[in-house]
Image 1 (cartoon, rainbow, N blue to C red):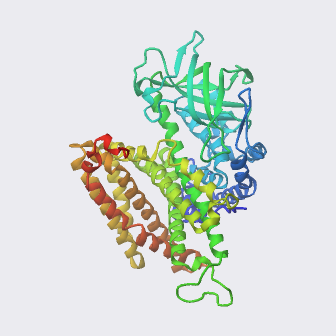
Image 2 (cartoon, helix red, strand yellow; image 1 turned 90 degrees about the horizontal axis):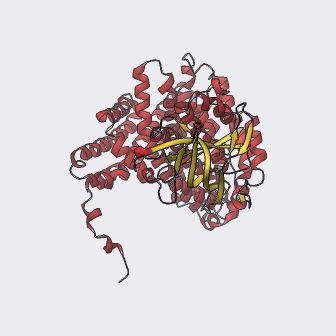
Image 3 (tube, rainbow, N blue to C red; image 1 turned 180 degrees about the vertical axis):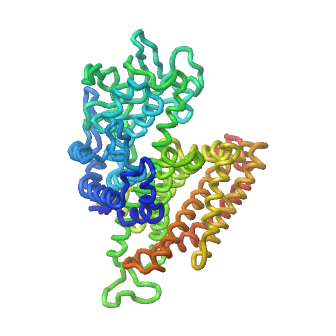
Length: 599
């Protein structure tokens, strides 16, 4: 049986010591985040996820969801009961606005919840997780009537929400959607069309499901500029807030998937369903990006989550499994063989995983603090900087975070050898579940193009320059034993700066140069951002050791892992820059027929 123990000590280290969240307590919106409450939330969240949700992970994978002839869907055994406990404990309201029944805690703690739930059971976490993006869109663009009708019940998870974007013939290019929205005399719209890959599209967890659906009104342009967004409830809501008739929307089938079997990924059929416009007509793209950006951060956390639980199980196995002898001589002469954790190649995989998971945890928590600061920082300058940094980091967290998270999951499977390929050990599920995170909410190639094609040019390059200034400031502040780490980060960010300049000089003349190097650039920035976090963590660890601490081993491990990160991850940046500078010529040279291998 796989294990999961929420990494509460590491989370507290980042939240309390690196980000110093308690120091924000005198600012509006942070008052409730006292040190004691922060620790209590982290501990209780970890306990709930480990004890209630994690035991259902393999159950959900083996059973999957069941669609019935009437289009209804039941979730795997135990999911509904666990979800009821989740709601009763108030986890859904943690970081939600108080005006709609939320606890108004910092988003930092809401993202901690997302990590722990996703590690414990990614399929389960997708049910409430997607609701957050739908709520954000309604809060940003919905009318007062729509907010009043839907938001409080969604925040309370009495009703859950979905995002309906993709259609059978189009995914990323949403300008091609065919779903139609015909205006009605009562101010509503009649929605007709088919959506696919709809996570949590139908289930038995809540009494209502609120779908946010992209569609086109009559005469709308055949492009993304013609998209509008509509709220379409599964069950119509009466004026007094009670539930009325069933709407004309139904699950046509459940997708047969590689992983995340416990989540009902549905084909949704809309047959004249009643819906209401969110925001302005043909301005749905802006509302969609509110949903997508929230979802992309959540998906990036999923990459970390699967890496984390795979790592925990691999460490336990490596300490227990005996095979061969240490290269330097028997580590345990009284045993017939040594534990495989003594072997350098096993250590390589485990250290790669440790360096990634702890670095990525710091990065997503830093990004989640920027979410709070975009609204709650004391000055407009601080709010702007937070928004610029968040925009840059989102595609990196989603793209690099899930690329590397999947790689770590497969490495941890490798630690198990043949047992990693056997279902009972659970490792192959982590690999299968991790794979989707590289694909949905915009494939990682799209994330790379978003970063390089849109975010680098944002405000004439002001955003990326602000990022470089932040990293350079961190480097300049390092002294003594931290200087070699800072020098390594300076070298890595130097490679990123050179790659940025190469794009500026070569992408305009041939846009394929940008496309050919985008993924490599995203990876460089992933290494640099994790290095930035590792230098921050190393500074705190060194300070604690200098002060004298009862947790000497914990902080020494931070310094050693930071050194490992810069030794083993940092050098990749130079090779990646050289790949970028190779340009697109050879990549784009072959005629498409030359890709065929048959005579």
